[in-house]
Image 1 (tube, rainbow, N blue to C red):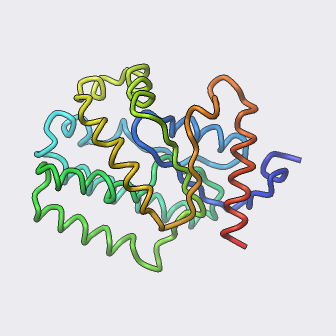
Image 2: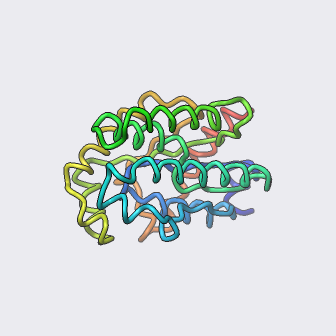
Length: 219
Protein backbone atom coordinates (compact mmCIF):
# COMPACT_ATOMS: atom_id res chain seq x y z
CA UNK A 1 0.00 0.00 0.00
CA UNK A 2 1.42 3.39 -0.98
CA UNK A 3 1.11 6.53 1.15
CA UNK A 4 -1.78 7.95 -0.87
CA UNK A 5 -3.81 4.80 -0.28
CA UNK A 6 -2.69 4.56 3.36
CA UNK A 7 -4.09 8.01 4.09
CA UNK A 8 -7.10 7.70 1.75
CA UNK A 9 -6.28 10.79 -0.30
CA UNK A 10 -8.31 10.79 -3.56
CA UNK A 11 -6.17 10.24 -6.66
CA UNK A 12 -7.67 13.26 -8.45
CA UNK A 13 -7.01 15.76 -5.66
CA UNK A 14 -5.58 19.18 -6.46
CA UNK A 15 -3.62 20.72 -3.58
CA UNK A 16 -2.23 24.25 -3.72
CA UNK A 17 0.67 25.46 -1.56
CA UNK A 18 0.55 29.10 -0.44
CA UNK A 19 2.71 31.38 1.69
CA UNK A 20 5.12 34.26 1.48
CA UNK A 21 8.55 34.08 -0.15
CA UNK A 22 10.96 31.87 1.78
CA UNK A 23 8.59 29.51 3.61
CA UNK A 24 9.45 26.48 1.48
CA UNK A 25 6.58 26.17 -0.96
CA UNK A 26 8.69 24.38 -3.58
CA UNK A 27 10.12 21.96 -1.02
CA UNK A 28 6.63 21.12 0.23
CA UNK A 29 5.35 20.75 -3.33
CA UNK A 30 8.03 18.22 -4.27
CA UNK A 31 7.75 16.29 -0.99
CA UNK A 32 3.98 15.87 -1.26
CA UNK A 33 4.13 15.00 -4.95
CA UNK A 34 6.70 12.29 -4.23
CA UNK A 35 4.76 10.89 -1.29
CA UNK A 36 1.43 10.81 -3.14
CA UNK A 37 2.80 10.00 -6.60
CA UNK A 38 1.21 13.21 -7.89
CA UNK A 39 2.46 15.58 -10.57
CA UNK A 40 3.82 19.01 -9.75
CA UNK A 41 2.76 22.39 -11.02
CA UNK A 42 5.67 24.76 -10.40
CA UNK A 43 5.95 28.52 -10.58
CA UNK A 44 8.01 29.38 -13.66
CA UNK A 45 10.32 32.02 -12.22
CA UNK A 46 13.18 31.65 -14.69
CA UNK A 47 11.00 32.21 -17.77
CA UNK A 48 9.14 35.23 -16.40
CA UNK A 49 10.09 38.20 -18.63
CA UNK A 50 9.07 40.81 -16.06
CA UNK A 51 10.40 39.58 -12.71
CA UNK A 52 13.91 41.04 -12.77
CA UNK A 53 12.59 44.34 -14.15
CA UNK A 54 9.89 44.40 -11.48
CA UNK A 55 12.32 44.06 -8.58
CA UNK A 56 14.27 47.04 -9.92
CA UNK A 57 11.23 49.26 -10.58
CA UNK A 58 7.98 48.27 -8.85
CA UNK A 59 5.97 51.19 -10.20
CA UNK A 60 6.90 50.63 -13.83
CA UNK A 61 6.35 46.88 -13.96
CA UNK A 62 3.84 45.86 -11.26
CA UNK A 63 0.80 45.80 -13.59
CA UNK A 64 2.65 43.90 -16.32
CA UNK A 65 3.88 41.33 -13.80
CA UNK A 66 0.43 40.75 -12.30
CA UNK A 67 -1.29 40.31 -15.65
CA UNK A 68 1.42 37.87 -16.73
CA UNK A 69 0.99 35.83 -13.54
CA UNK A 70 -2.79 35.83 -13.89
CA UNK A 71 -2.67 34.54 -17.46
CA UNK A 72 -0.10 31.84 -16.68
CA UNK A 73 -1.80 30.61 -13.52
CA UNK A 74 -5.23 30.57 -15.17
CA UNK A 75 -3.95 28.43 -18.05
CA UNK A 76 -2.17 26.11 -15.64
CA UNK A 77 -5.26 25.70 -13.43
CA UNK A 78 -7.35 24.70 -16.42
CA UNK A 79 -4.68 22.25 -17.58
CA UNK A 80 -4.51 20.57 -14.17
CA UNK A 81 -8.22 19.87 -14.01
CA UNK A 82 -8.51 18.90 -17.66
CA UNK A 83 -5.78 16.34 -16.99
CA UNK A 84 -7.87 14.83 -14.20
CA UNK A 85 -6.19 16.21 -11.08
CA UNK A 86 -3.53 14.46 -9.03
CA UNK A 87 -1.41 17.62 -8.72
CA UNK A 88 0.49 19.59 -6.09
CA UNK A 89 0.60 23.24 -7.09
CA UNK A 90 3.37 25.66 -6.04
CA UNK A 91 1.60 28.96 -5.20
CA UNK A 92 -2.06 29.82 -5.68
CA UNK A 93 -3.74 32.13 -8.13
CA UNK A 94 -5.54 33.87 -5.25
CA UNK A 95 -2.41 35.43 -3.79
CA UNK A 96 -1.90 37.58 -6.86
CA UNK A 97 -4.98 39.71 -6.28
CA UNK A 98 -5.39 39.32 -2.53
CA UNK A 99 -1.84 40.36 -1.71
CA UNK A 100 0.40 41.56 -4.51
CA UNK A 101 -1.83 43.69 -6.71
CA UNK A 102 -3.61 45.13 -3.68
CA UNK A 103 -0.32 45.96 -1.99
CA UNK A 104 1.02 47.81 -5.00
CA UNK A 105 -2.20 49.74 -5.41
CA UNK A 106 -2.26 50.80 -1.75
CA UNK A 107 1.42 51.75 -1.76
CA UNK A 108 1.10 53.74 -4.97
CA UNK A 109 3.22 51.47 -7.17
CA UNK A 110 0.19 50.51 -9.26
CA UNK A 111 -2.15 53.19 -10.59
CA UNK A 112 -5.87 53.10 -9.67
CA UNK A 113 -6.72 52.52 -13.34
CA UNK A 114 -4.33 49.60 -13.65
CA UNK A 115 -5.59 48.12 -10.38
CA UNK A 116 -9.22 48.36 -11.47
CA UNK A 117 -8.39 46.78 -14.82
CA UNK A 118 -6.50 43.94 -13.16
CA UNK A 119 -9.17 43.34 -10.49
CA UNK A 120 -11.98 43.23 -13.05
CA UNK A 121 -10.00 40.80 -15.18
CA UNK A 122 -9.28 38.58 -12.18
CA UNK A 123 -12.94 38.52 -11.11
CA UNK A 124 -14.11 37.66 -14.63
CA UNK A 125 -11.60 34.83 -14.97
CA UNK A 126 -11.38 33.33 -11.48
CA UNK A 127 -14.29 34.33 -9.27
CA UNK A 128 -16.91 32.46 -11.25
CA UNK A 129 -18.67 29.09 -10.77
CA UNK A 130 -16.82 27.78 -13.84
CA UNK A 131 -13.31 28.21 -12.45
CA UNK A 132 -11.95 24.95 -10.96
CA UNK A 133 -10.85 25.72 -7.39
CA UNK A 134 -8.37 23.39 -5.64
CA UNK A 135 -9.61 20.84 -3.13
CA UNK A 136 -7.24 22.15 -0.46
CA UNK A 137 -4.94 25.12 0.09
CA UNK A 138 -1.99 24.45 2.40
CA UNK A 139 -0.80 27.68 3.99
CA UNK A 140 2.81 27.63 5.19
CA UNK A 141 3.43 30.12 7.97
CA UNK A 142 6.32 31.22 10.15
CA UNK A 143 7.62 34.28 11.98
CA UNK A 144 9.09 37.20 10.06
CA UNK A 145 12.56 36.30 11.40
CA UNK A 146 12.16 32.73 10.12
CA UNK A 147 11.16 33.95 6.68
CA UNK A 148 13.99 36.49 6.34
CA UNK A 149 16.54 33.92 7.48
CA UNK A 150 15.40 31.48 4.79
CA UNK A 151 15.46 34.17 2.10
CA UNK A 152 19.04 35.03 3.04
CA UNK A 153 20.06 31.36 3.07
CA UNK A 154 18.92 30.64 -0.46
CA UNK A 155 20.62 33.75 -1.79
CA UNK A 156 18.68 34.70 -4.92
CA UNK A 157 20.27 37.99 -6.09
CA UNK A 158 17.03 39.84 -6.82
CA UNK A 159 15.69 38.91 -3.36
CA UNK A 160 18.93 39.90 -1.61
CA UNK A 161 18.68 43.37 -3.16
CA UNK A 162 15.08 43.84 -1.97
CA UNK A 163 14.69 45.95 1.21
CA UNK A 164 13.73 44.12 4.41
CA UNK A 165 10.73 46.46 4.68
CA UNK A 166 9.25 44.79 1.59
CA UNK A 167 9.38 41.33 3.23
CA UNK A 168 7.87 42.80 6.40
CA UNK A 169 5.03 44.23 4.36
CA UNK A 170 4.45 40.93 2.57
CA UNK A 171 4.49 38.91 5.79
CA UNK A 172 1.82 41.08 7.37
CA UNK A 173 -0.35 41.07 4.29
CA UNK A 174 -0.18 37.29 3.98
CA UNK A 175 -1.43 36.87 7.53
CA UNK A 176 -4.29 39.27 6.91
CA UNK A 177 -5.16 37.60 3.60
CA UNK A 178 -5.29 34.03 4.89
CA UNK A 179 -7.53 35.03 7.80
CA UNK A 180 -10.24 36.09 5.35
CA UNK A 181 -9.66 33.52 2.59
CA UNK A 182 -12.64 31.26 1.82
CA UNK A 183 -12.36 30.07 -1.80
CA UNK A 184 -11.47 26.53 -0.69
CA UNK A 185 -10.56 24.60 2.52
CA UNK A 186 -7.34 25.69 4.28
CA UNK A 187 -4.74 23.65 6.17
CA UNK A 188 -2.28 25.84 8.06
CA UNK A 189 1.19 24.42 8.75
CA UNK A 190 3.94 26.09 10.78
CA UNK A 191 7.29 25.74 9.02
CA UNK A 192 9.03 24.88 12.30
CA UNK A 193 6.85 21.81 12.88
CA UNK A 194 8.49 19.67 10.16
CA UNK A 195 11.79 19.27 8.34
CA UNK A 196 11.23 17.90 4.86
CA UNK A 197 14.81 18.59 3.80
CA UNK A 198 16.38 16.33 6.42
CA UNK A 199 13.61 13.98 7.60
CA UNK A 200 11.56 12.12 5.00
CA UNK A 201 9.22 10.74 7.66
CA UNK A 202 8.03 14.22 8.63
CA UNK A 203 5.76 14.20 5.58
CA UNK A 204 3.46 11.55 7.05
CA UNK A 205 1.84 13.69 9.79
CA UNK A 206 1.18 16.25 7.05
CA UNK A 207 -0.47 13.60 4.87
CA UNK A 208 -2.68 12.61 7.78
CA UNK A 209 -3.88 16.19 8.15
CA UNK A 210 -4.40 16.53 4.39
CA UNK A 211 -6.54 13.40 4.37
CA UNK A 212 -8.74 14.73 7.16
CA UNK A 213 -9.29 18.10 5.50
CA UNK A 214 -9.86 16.81 1.96
CA UNK A 215 -12.19 13.98 2.88
CA UNK A 216 -14.26 16.17 5.17
CA UNK A 217 -14.78 18.76 2.43
CA UNK A 218 -15.22 16.49 -0.59
CA UNK A 219 -17.52 13.80 0.78
